[in-house]
Image (cartoon, rainbow, N blue to C red; front, side, top):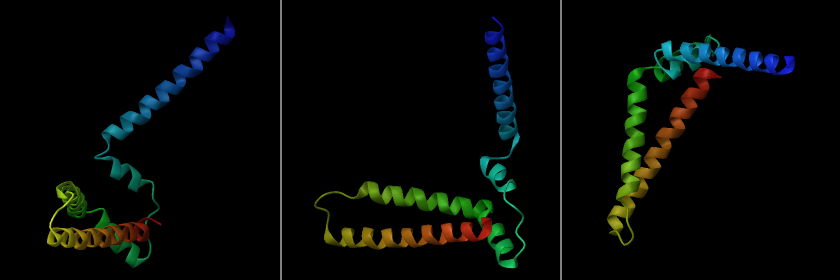
Length: 112
């Protein structure tokens, strides 16, 4: 049946295109580089500065460490903990929130 052969051929072409795209992604240094390469080049000096910061490996490591610390902090909380610990975790949560808001603001400035 011709329609079956045509359908199989179309599916095969789609799979080849997906395989090619996957190989391009795998050749990239990491997924961030692929995403950043699709963003138009920043023209404004502030955007250029923000892009240099948010694409820096050290910045990404810092944010990763903050996420891990935040996760650990959430994991050590328990029912009936001392009030001092509750106050400390509340202050730390606010600090983490501020860092996350600053990070997303910097990324919006750099990539929008």
